[in-house]
Image (cartoon, rainbow, N blue to C red; front, side):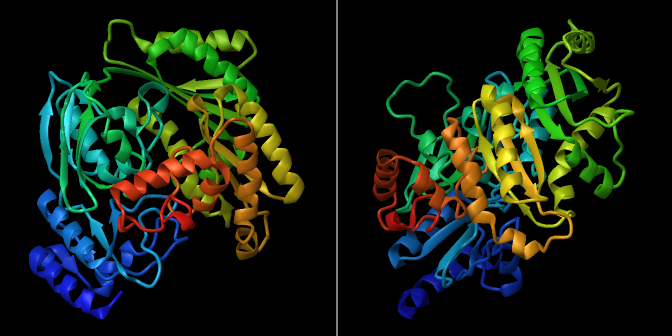
Length: 478
């Protein structure tokens, strides 16, 4: 970028945003220049922290006028480098954490209107105070901001019942690449007036526009919860248990998570205060949770009957049902702590894949055989959202191996696993998105028609490719 352009743009941003809204200080920028996994690190001209949609629009207009790239960032909890700047440092970061107001909560309409910088946990708490539920649940909910959550179409632990982020949104407000503002903050379930524009921006990772506010769907607050930690023989038994749970619990079944013994061992070893829920060791576990907004038909007896039937059918090896909130939280802590515990075991090559639920056991068998043959001693730590077919097929380095040598195989190992997932009708990016990490994979697995459609959308909405440059689309299409 020409120095003359920067000489005009940077002072204009600093003057308009003020010292709370603009910084070029290295210490202030530092935490925003590296992603959550520390795989990507970039440079930036400065950090914009606008306090309103109008200020976001001003920033975008100035950057558009001077050809400056803009990288939107929420809580910086993403796992594919989608919110990290690139290149020589000719982009600015725009972080919406100061835009953290809950603008409206309509309990009768079951909607909440929020600014993009609202932290997910704060939204959940506000809904709870109104005796409502916002069901999106993530391990990072204490720092993830809703703008980023929607821009990545986050998944989480309750997709089985409530769907991904895009299914929990009724309206959006978005600043477009020219600085104009689209106000689509409508809380309507029925609005059949043409294209559903909001869906263009959900999952687009800030490449088509910057989400500044959203109307979210709320649900009746759960008044009854029943949670079980069940031992099973293998993933095939898990899917059979899932089928039974759907039949017996119906819409009450909210979560169904799969954990391997090796993952539980990692948690018990590295996470203080955790304990094994069962007396004996088993190869695999399922974490089931049922919820209901009514106490009329208690869920605990339903879950007990479900597990008894599963046991009679030979699907169950043992199980524990949470008797208190503390026990329920302890079960979930085992699941939610698994990624952190795995870090303590050295290098880990990650995969966020999905396959049809019916094919999950076959995928597990084939993928495990594939990687153990090619990487002797590798430790397969496969866990995740079995209820919706999303598996985190992670590989910990062999014991005693060199971390850097192991991680150097990341791309080739990804290709093996992604090839298999796609061959089986699945996806190479189930819930984490594409970002920087999976641009080449998108180019490899998506059809020419899909790439062409995405490219047309990008060029139409962001003709100068200034919104989150270098993300999602293959390099040749930026």
